[in-house]
Length: 126
Image (tube, rainbow, N blue to C red; front, top):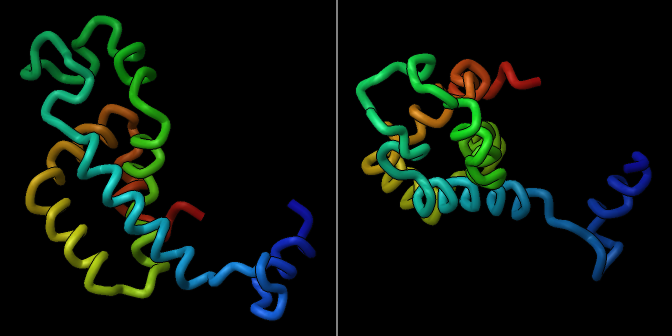
């Protein structure tokens, strides 16, 4: 994308093509949290034995590669989007639900994808 396009789309005077950046950031954060809530589950890759380490599972790379792209994106970047958002009641509800019911399943995904550091410490993503 050419830099001038970003400048153009972020100017409120360019309606109907303008983008409210604050709203967009909240949409990304809440969208990621909703995606995680919807798709994360115990033993997400359906490994035959959940007591084995990631490297002990034969063919684990295929299981990991089959994770939906939207889920892997949300797993890696929800923290970055949350940090950039204007915290509101909707995001608070989604965050509480995620932390209370899906956080351990999220940790499994980022562990399998070897993205623990980039997902857990969003400021290091850049």
